[in-house]
Length: 131
Image (cartoon, rainbow, N blue to C red; front, top):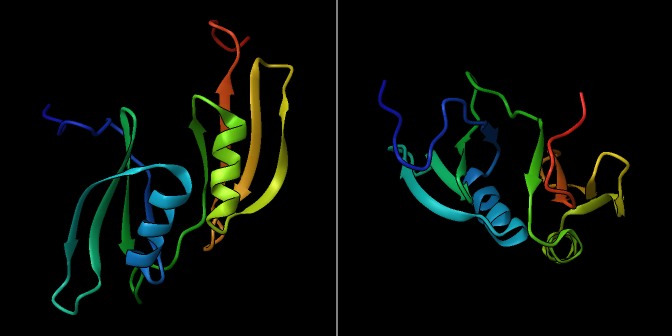
């Protein structure tokens, strides 16, 4: 099985209204890196790819066949406090303050401009999550 570089066997795919602007928002607010952007004949985003470290998400314009999607993402970062500040500075809504969690993460939460939730998490221990 061939999987392109930068992609995993499962990749989140978000449909959004004004997907080009949404993709720019995610890149600025969460520090993603654009990995590709293709357009439909009408100029709307057909497929955008944003990388976060070794993972990627895909974004496309919603339409009559594919309605806007909402999901929750768990994003690992080096510094949860700095990442939360950046997300809020770029217009994301804070839904949970950054705090140390009993499962070994320092985590906060934001909601993006189309309603997706992003759990911004810094792993504090070099250990797996308890079963």
